[in-house]
Length: 477
Image (cartoon, rainbow, N blue to C red; front, side, top):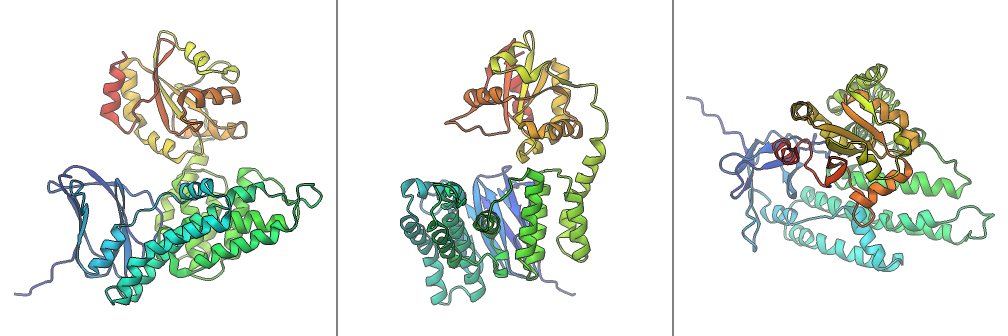
């Protein structure tokens, strides 16, 4: 009888985690490629078991309350266990490269811009904040330096850890320059112009680039690289350098995106990095449901340049979705899509709420540029049936600016948003921030409930939280 070797697996386990949700980011041919992975449910043992089908080493990202990275080699077995009750060792690992994997699992990064602003607020002098940031970077790298020196991780694992950490801290370092860059005066005729600041800023950027090379193709394996490359492309190549050469015309969003795409395409010519970056830029636009008119052309151009690209299957559905959008927006508004009368003149939430006396209303605060807002629209069919059955009205309040007026109306058609619609005026937007914001910031999507012309629930459940939302709404009938 022929015996076959059992296929190796990758197990992510949470103690007492049965039925809980986890998201898994899988590598693509060993590279990190951004996606919105679906949620997987942990089984009765609190585990998610995946076959290890990898052909080359790559990194899996498991998101359960935070991100856990796992360096996976072909043909190897891995087990990660999360035990939140164990304060000494909340994360344990079984498998190859055990000490290196444990050091990797112990890493936790804040969003790089938040980390940068924290450092900048403490000390606006780059030399000082740079010393602190690089000190943190060295501390993160130290365990991997020691393990490599002791031959407990090989050169490939070590190179990955270095790329992951260095690209993150280069992003943090570069992001501390955003506010100083925006404050710079580039007009030589201005009284504020300081000729010494331009070479000084360029030299400062060179210090950032010395931490991590934004054109290093080896970085494609690390999830921290894309943010770093975006930061470098946007703020150094597309913002700083052009302004050192003369006046720059302020562009509308679509023209700006095309200019940024051209900057990316023209400054990164080495393959396979160029293909990777162009695919990544397209993927971000598709995942955010941006529906820009140039996306189909960019996609067709990418397919023409790289007909055998492994990224095409991951981009195709999104590109077709955008093409469908442009067909659908040519139709008329549906009967159930109504605009609040004279909405442009409404200046406060109290004024808006007063228009709905005698009704219970579910409010959806959104914007055309908000990816998570649009992701929630996928749950609208069930919500629509519930609201109709219970006699509850829906009110969609967009906080888009005037320039996005047509885009806003197009998206109402495309997403079939039945209910009342308002695009907030400048004064209403300001009042919305006072009513729903915290410390001057407003996070969307945001949901609320009106009853008889009054705001009764400023923080309601989202459409995706179906049962919990329905119970919440029934309490106000």
